[in-house]
Length: 453
Image (cartoon, rainbow, N blue to C red; front, side, top):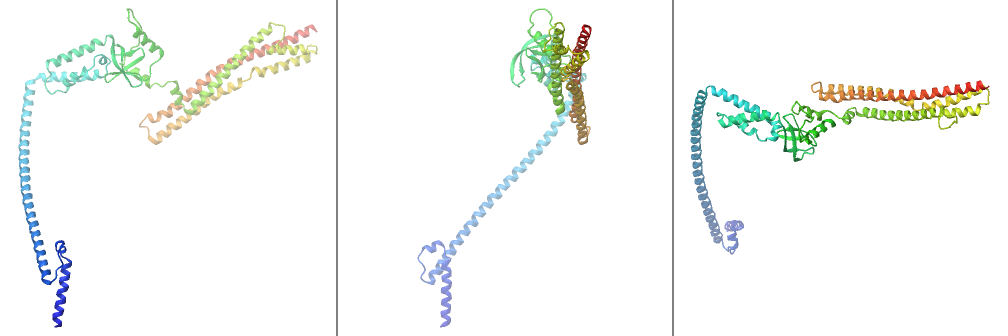
């Protein structure tokens, strides 16, 4: 009896466990009341899972069959493409052989004409290269298109192409001796394109009333920096001349190369910049020295004029050195000759420092300027040697800065010293002349007093 109860209890436990894993459909039904109901529910669930698995297996088999069919189609297409590629390769080889045969036939039939037309193509290429930077091409643009096609063609040139080559050569040769006036597109200094009237002197020079131009890739462009005023004035005269007669102008025989080099020549400001800080210091010294020397020279010249005027007048004036010496004489002329001589010498000695005031400074500046130039030279050479140490001597541009500073500061020091020395000499000579006049007049006054005594 007890064994049967244990069997029943185990059956009930299994039934409870089965109920816990029933499908949602089974969960929605009424809860089973007996073990038979549980068994029927489990059998139904197993049947549904089996049917689902069979359906999925059938779908997988259909998909596998479709994929195998697609794979067979792709393989067939690949085989067809490989066959087509082989056919095209064979066709290309066959065409290459035919092309070589045709080239051989062409070379054989051309004979001497092949060399002749080769020379024509080379002439077309050379002429096109010449026309690219020609001033004449700015008046007659797009002349090189046919020449390019002729130079690059592998076939024989046509009669029209040969005639065009001949005509272009004649046109270029004829226009080289003409002075033409025409309207052309010009690139201005601010990189803007504008239509302007241009005067062209052969292939050498082109200009407008604003300055000279150079041709770059068939387009006229103003020089970044124009040459001197005389050259620009010559261009303006030629540009404005319309009547008969001859007018002097400027021709660049290098076809624009020399005018283009004008941009590379540094102006005064750029030269000073090359000198660096030493260069600016020399400029300051030169300006101060020259201004001081000119000021003292002018003042001494006025003083000399006043002294000459005083020599013609018997009335002494305090506005000039001689007048002050004469006033001293008037004050002490009643004294004995020795005392009077001493008083006049003292008066002259008091005037001499005033006459020579500032001249020593000018002399010192004249001596300092070349020394500063020598200092700049040494600094520039040090910079050059440092560049050589770091970068070697392969690129001269790396050493150009130091060499420029060395040479420019030397030149600036000499340029500053020369006018300072000359001005100092002139001013010193004027001061000495005035001092000599004072001494002579003082001796003359003492001599007159001695004669009267």
